[in-house]
Image (tube, rainbow, N blue to C red):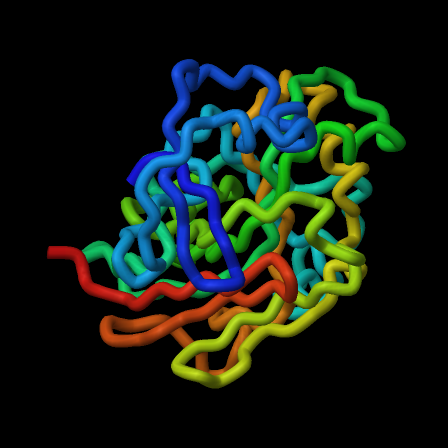
Length: 269
């Protein structure tokens, strides 16, 4: 569906119709309540709609690796790094809330990674850390499902992070004013109703303002760009024996007031 405004009180959404869909400053649009100026369309129940990824076609998806000490420790990687591990994910890998993550035919080593996604709302280059939150439109849940053997073919991560339909993203864009204390929110992943990851955002090695400053120092950030901030310890690859996702599984990424992203797993056809 198109743009939607949610109403948590009755689990309904209103389709939003706008004469001009070119929002160049998503942050200002949200903070200035531009939604109130849009023409209200038909109302739907959440059960009657299909979700899209929170940002369906972001220009940039920049991912951060090894950004929780628990995950660094379990992998044995990056212990002495003074800078974050950065790699990219492609927009055509994204899948929405309630859509399946696809296990590719090329591998059975499909791993879960629950993460907080930060959506940029205001353009900037070399953004100072103290100004970073002024450039955030909101937050969402991300499952950065990884094909571990392809990730480890060489020193770079991109092949293992870009198989089709492996990036769960949703269900909502939650604006910063809706979250009382972001750092207190836990990133929790469950696989078939078993908790496999659970850690507060406050445990990030490189916090969000640092990431925005660092990333915007080498690339211009624009509204709709996405920064995926890293996964806690507990990934399947680090377990003994390894715990891989498989067809028929159900995986949920819950982040407090940000929401819960739910995906099943299917094999590639």
